[in-house]
Each structure stands twice: as structure tokens, then as C-alpha cells.
Length: 361
Image (tube, rainbow, N blue to C red; front, side, top):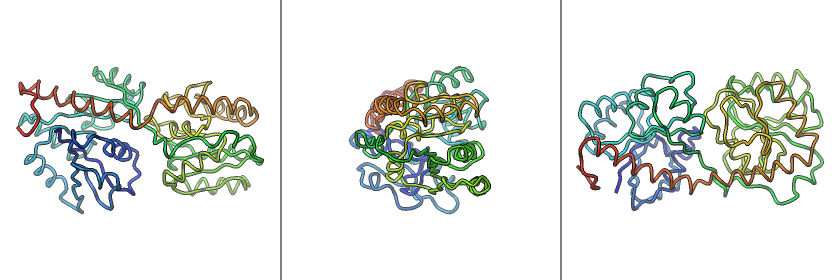
């Protein structure tokens, strides 16, 4: 039995992308092989609450770092999975080095590293890890180039019971086309470009899912441009987002700073041709086959025009997107994680000259 600690939250209401990833993995891990300890601040995901060999550690209002470190020294888990960039990680790395803790470190990197790490803690977590994982081929490439550290690529999976295509022919019979954006409303997401495109296509519905500090300015922009075809949907839970994706015809995602956004894979699984930026080289989109990867806002606009005016191309890209998305099933992804967990633990024990037997030290 391998004991895994992750500083991720099991809360059902927590929609942070990193926590969503861990919840999907933990919910599928074989309970007879992996004991998991993770954090919880409110009602947990029901799948994780019902999972055997799972301990949820209550996140309190204060004193969490000291309490978790104390627990860590008492229990000494086999693996620390997905470190973040806070005081807990900094303290853990110090203890691990100076006390020669047996706990293996598996660092999952979800942002490209061409411009360097976002913190010194992340740089240490990468450099000292027993295994490093990037969430896209390009992310893994930038890790190797920046740190000289080989990174395995493991993609975020897609819940295909939630994100799946509409019935055959459902999109061809619609009287009005629909463009969907889904994501947070932050400056880096450039949601205003979606609103500006809506002004050019008054006969097309533009539906925007999500929220954030840029929502107000985007609403004001839509009003000033007279965009009666723009609808702000707010945050949508996964089931409702899947429904919106099946009701749309094109997915427009102008964000320029990303790791490997799950929403592109989800849209592809729903048969949506996607238009996204090439700067972070998302593997969920195959340029010219399942959608378009573009370099500029002008090209984004051009490709949207292509998809809105060419029904046959939309149809062929939709079918290709569904086939491509089938490669990212969560059940298959979790099996890869299980194998790497075992590898990371064995590497740490080997580096300390320990036997690889299971159980407490």
C-alpha cells in the first residue's frame, strides 16, 4: 500500500483547475493499492468521500501549515503529490532534505516554463523531485529546456460521461449558429475579443460562461457595441457546461497565458471545433483538423469567419475533434498516474539506499 499526501482540496464546490484534476485522479485510484490523504474545507466530492483508504484532513481558519507539518512528521507518507508554491511546500522541502525523509516528491507542472518559474519554491520542487510531470508536450519541453530535467507528459483527462457529442445531425438542423466561450474573466483570457467578434456577427449567438473581474467591463463593452446577441451565463457546473457545449457550434478561446486548458479537451469531446492561441501549443487542438491554432487576434477573427461560413468544414472538424478527444479518457490517464506513483516511490527509496518493501519505515 502506498500512502499519498496531496495539498489539494476534495471539496465538491472547489472548481480550481488543479484541484479538479486531483479529484478526478483520486476518485479513480485503486483503493487496494493507494491510501490518499488530501485537504477538505467544506462538503467533499461524494466519490472521494465514499472512497476506501481515503483520509480528508480538515482545513482550518489558521495554523494549517504547522498542523500539517506535524502530521507529516508523524505519518511520513510515501509520496507528496502535486506540491503548490506556499510555506507548506517550502518547509516540506527543507525537512525532506535535512531529515532524509523517505517521502518521494512528484511535481506536476501545469504552466509552461519558457519564462522561468513563478516562484523559487516551484523551481526547488522541480529540481528536487523524484519525478516531474508536464500537462502538455510543450510544457514538458520547457521544463527540460529551463531546468535540464526530463518530464513525463500526462494530460488532464476528459470525463466522457459528461462531455460527449450531441446526437448525429443535431447541429445541422439549427436555425441560428452559436459561439461559446468558457473560462474565467481575467485580463489574460481576453474575453473582450469574444464580445468584439459578436458585434461583427449580429445573427450569431455568443454565449459566455464563467466569471471574474473582467465580467463587468465585458458587459459594458457588449452594451456599448449594441450586442443583443451576447449572453453571460455565469459559472456553470460540469454537467451544465457539457450541455452548453453540445448546444454550440464553435468554441472560441482567445486566452494567451495558459498551461494546457482542460476546457479545450472538453469542447473537443463535445464535437466543437476550437479556435485557440498557439502560444502555449495545446495538444487538445490539432491545427487545421479539429480546429485552428492562431498567432494573432486578426487571425482569430479570420478563422472564426471560416468556421461560421463553412458548414461542411465545421462538420468534418467536429467529427475529428470527437475522435481526438477519445485519447484523453480519465480512466486511462489515471492508470498512467498509478504507474508513475510507484516509480517515484521506488526512486526515492533507491536514492536513500532503502529496500522497496511496502509499509511503514
